[in-house]
Image (cartoon, rainbow, N blue to C red):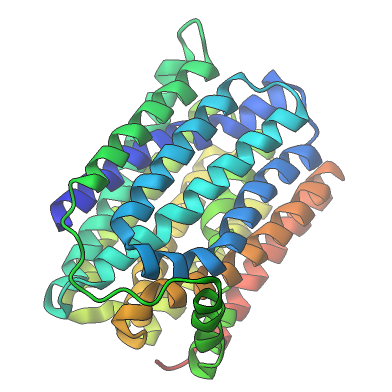
Length: 374
């Protein structure tokens, strides 16, 4: 089962990052959109995706991660296909909505499958999942860059991504049916599942304190092109970030280090340092950009498995989707608001851009200080 999940993750991440690494440049330079409009499109995708995780997490508990995952791939395939041909704000927002819905269905499906693995194999399985994600992240941006050089350009990149997500949907259907008993289905049960998680005060505090993590993980892909770095430098920095994050995984998986609070705090501090470095750049200093990429790679490599391991240990197996939904909802709402504000600040010029990045780093530092205990 872990092998199939890893294969799914590799396929979808190549498709996703081949598009997302070049989306900002396409919106900004090919379509001529303002930074604030770019931030709106990205914010709608992130905000809606994570807002839907609140009910979709419980839906995953009801119908099972296998069917949820297959549905997610179908929706995202359509969304990426539309993104490649859209040239107006309405169509772009429609594509962002479809991509968001697909992502909202995908994440709890995969995480629920991995959380159901026996504890002795869970750390290694999730490490393989994260490593595959980052290796695919290294492959995705260059693949997108190559596809951009052909006639159709960005439409070819998004079409390829759509095909890869369709393949992943077939792989989901090859997974065995789950053994755990599903929770009762119905609207009241969705509300009851979310309410049960919200009543878990210890977990809710953990979710609120780690809310900045999605913004921290994603914002560098927005910030680097908006700072003025070209496609080559941006692609190199994304690849370096992903390679470092993958290289960290054996360390995090060994001896269940991902469950230890200091690992999460260290990752958040590295993220804070990365954004402070970015705040001083203007699109010409490639060396410091690579330093920021390394720091962000270490941060991503530590933070993602740490949050998963601690959530999987805490949540009841039959309710993991609900717990994951609340956790990701908090992170997504924070990222949605952050993307909107950051886009506006970048439109104000270099001072606004530096202030935005320093602010993101400050949130990472605050989360590191506030994250405590199991």
